[in-house]
Length: 450
Picture 1 (spheres, one colour):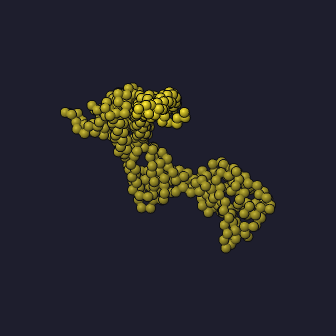
Picture 2: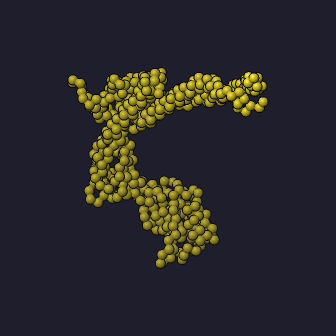
Picture 3: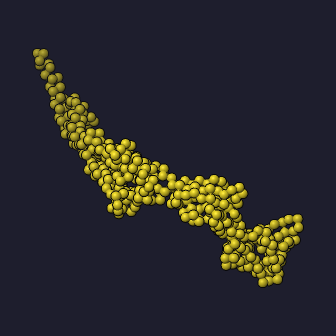
């Protein structure tokens, strides 16, 4: 008997029985695998948020990784005769600056020739700077003025001479311009070849000269219009000769830069702590009771409360500048004092105003707060960090769950085939009994009538 569906021959609901057996076999394993998958995905999500919170804070913290980051100055110049910049470390002060002379470069002009196609003969031209630089250019008899111009401009040893061909009503001449200003870079052109005398005999149309300024009446010269460190840590650029009174330069430290950086650090730290509190929350936290969350909070708290060991004296911690850790584990700059003590905001302002070097050192020295935080976060987030390793292991576990599902599916198919084989025999047997019963019933029916 060929049975295509369990129960067709016997009339029994064997398909439901098979389905019930298979379901009973699969459900416990599926529940276990689903719970494991959910647990891993929740943990992976939490670790991702953990790493992201650390990275975001690290980015904010690294803005304070160099002591130079704390130094920025306000520079006020009363007119446009000069432009001024500082490296952030200049001493505060006010200066009177007058531009007496702008630096100039040499410009020379040859005698006139008929036109640009004029040739002059062969020989060698020598270009010399007052500072001792020199280069030679070989001129061929077939070279016209255009070719001579190109040879000089393209000479590999040319130290900064630019040659231009100028056509005017009286003819054509070559103009030699030095790119370097100042008397130390004054340019001369010579030749030992008579044929080239007209190229070496020049008229000076612009003489080289130094830039000259006066700082509080004291003369300062420069080969350029830039005066670097004439006032220590200050660069002055002369723009134009003073015509209507000296410029007044005022330099002051911009304490708002350090204040902004430190307040951003505090806000970033607190945002990260808030994230860690949420991740480790006993009920809703994706990493509830996670030891690494607790460890990170503890280690960060130690860093921001401990002193920086390489700094001597009392001013050697965040607490010494008014930044304390509150009961929630967050940083706090109090706005009100306690008793005779200044508020945290007042202490911080005083530290930035009077001890900016020490403030920078607490954050940015080699064993300072930022270095310690960076090393700590790297130990969690780097490619070999503990959180990264956990992510890798959990993703391997997820892959294993997929394989477990495939194994379960294979086992269930085999189990179903076994059930069908067994129930097929039962179906055939019952079908046979039913057929015999029907035959006997039919055969015995006339006897019962008699």
